[in-house]
Amino acid sequence: MDDDDETADRVTLAQVAENAGVSVSTVSKVLNGRQDVSPPTRLKIERLLAAHGYRRGARTPPDAPLIEIVFHELDAIWAMELILGVEKVATENGASVVLTQSGTRHAPGPEWIEGVLRRRPLGVILVFSALPAEFKRQLRSRSIPFVIIDPAGDPEPDVPSVGSANWSGGLAATRHLIELGHRRIGVITGPEDMMCSLARLDGFRSAMSTAGLTTTPGLVAHGDFHVEGGYVRALDMLRGPDRPTAVFAGSDLQAIGVLEAAATLGLRTPDDLSVVGYDDVAVAQWSRPALTTVHQPLRRMAEAGAEMLLRLRAGERTTTRIELATSLVVRKSTAPPPA
Image 1 (cartoon, rainbow, N blue to C red):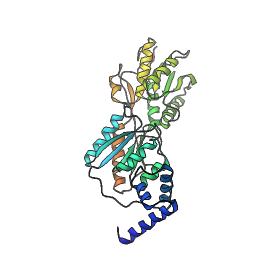
Image 2: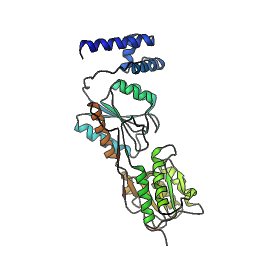
Image 3: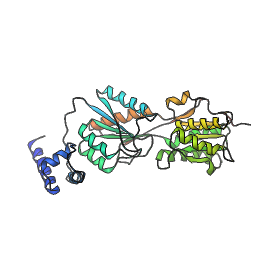
Image 4: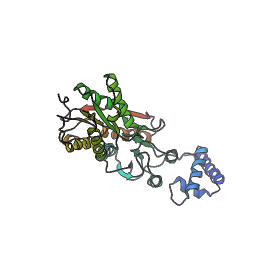
């Protein structure tokens, strides 16, 4: 940076400090992610920095470059696939991976932003469906790139993200059951406030409609993507007067819950009930029977996200959205309906 640029930055920081009614050192603390600034003051300074168009200059990479992955639940069965994908790309580029758990499935918690601004990693990969505007502003003001990997959401257009074809996955799962001869097909998708749940359900409905089949309201349920949710909702569905001959579950864990519910009621899979899952996590091939499922390329999604992050870090132009294809994996949990 030349002398004129340095003067311009000093004037900008001085203007921000004056407008905010604080010292230049307080503005500097905010820029460096220090915690000893009150949230209201920090927010005021952040907004003034954005209004002045202030951007940090390029900085020297840290001695131990880090890529940070942020989950809302590290014990999720699919988390390891994402970690392995990011770790592969990080290792190839001389970086390490740090894991953080924070927030809800929609966005990280407010405590996380303080920590990441102190750590100042090469970049951040977020396994959430959204990122609050204030967090985006703070990360961008520190030149910390970020990418969302969204197996469970649909981020805003201005957020770099990697996802998969949820609608196509729901369509393929349901078509497979229809082609086997099933006509009464139930679906247990995920939470109603998650875009992937709705997209998989829309794929199911499209397949049913195209085949001239009616979607029975009592055979449509929203679960929580976990075993217990699949078990409880499958019990209700299978005890009903119009029991389905097949169920499409919106996750492999829910599908395992459906298998358990069928066994509880004395139904055999796939002789009495066919079941299709979603994700193709490792446990799917070891369930009894082995689970027919939709393969979501989680590891490749993570690799693509990490590659996008490093391109952003290098200042390269890149697409803001990558969507990878899903595919059906047929195993032993599906068969033609009982005669």
